[in-house]
Length: 125
Image 1: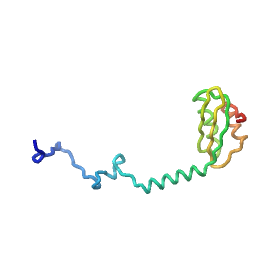
Image 2 (image 1 turned 90 degrees about the horizontal axis):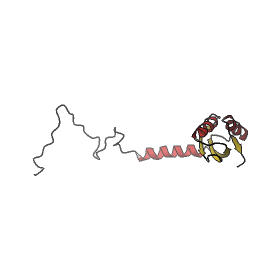
Image 3 (image 1 turned 135 degrees about the horizontal axis):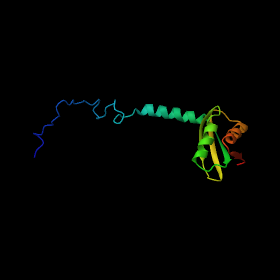
Image 4 (image 1 turned 90 degrees about the vertical axis):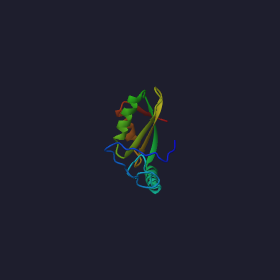
């Protein structure tokens, strides 16, 4: 069988779409679009510079045992002014490390009060 006489049949009512460029990618389709590398670099630099501006502090917190504990502590600390993110390395039944990233340094007393409000205790690390 040769492909010379082969014709592509389209179903009745179907519309053939032309691709936007010769690479076969349609710029309007997010799954096929080729990203503009300059935009990606610019966005990455903006994210990196935003992270560089944040202050990061670690706190030792006793008493947390599960994901619910983590959510309570994260919610209380996240409510403090300037807090951007809260990450918890849970040590169930032990002393967990809580990392708080904020736009400015936080007062230790404010952090301790928020953790105590959630029902846990900041301990000397």
